[in-house]
Length: 251
Image (cartoon, rainbow, N blue to C red; front, top):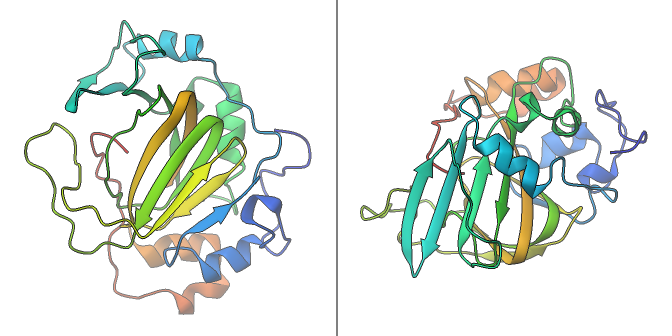
C-alpha cells in the first residue's frame, strides 16, 4: 500500500484517501451523514489475496466465509467452510471472506489505514470476490462502511431509503422495494463511503471483481465520534441511536 500512507494519519492533514479532505473534515461533513465517492483513493491498490488464496481460506473451519449464488434468479446462501467454488466463467456468484485481516498481513495493513485515531472501533476487513453479475442483492447495513474496489469493476446503486421492505422468500436480507437514487461504477483504487442505513446494491461488472469492505462498530453514534474526534462531539446527534453490526447474512 506504499509508504505514503500512515496508519495513524494526522486528523487535520488532507489525504487522497478521503478525496482531499482531512479526517477531521470528513467526520464533520460525511460521517453518518452522507456518502462520499472517492476516485483513486488508493492509486496503488492491490488485492490483499488472490482467488486461490481466498479459496483456501474459505475452506478452513476457523475462517468465516459465505457463498452467495443467484443462478437463474434463485438466491442461495451457503455458510463456510466452502470446499469448492463455481468457475469464474459462470456468472452470478459471490464469495465473502470475513476477518481477512486476521489471516493476511496485507489485509491487516489495509485495515490499519482507517485508524484515523487511536482505539477507533474498527470491525474487520471483509473481502468479496465475484463473477460477472455477482452480488448479494440490495440491502442496508447498520454501521458505517467503506467499500474499496481492489480488482475488476463493480456497479453500485445507492439510496437514502427509509421505507425498505425485506423479501421473505430468500435466505438473504434483500430489499424488495429498492429505490436507488445514484449509480457509480467503481474501478480498482476507487472507494465509496456509506453511512448507516443507506440502501445499496453492488453488482460485479465482468469476472474477477474484488471488493474490500471496512466496517466501523460503535455502541452509539456519539460514542464513536467522541473516540475519533472529540472536538466534533457537539455536532453529533445525541439521540443515542445504536449502530451495532447485527451480523447480517451478507453485507
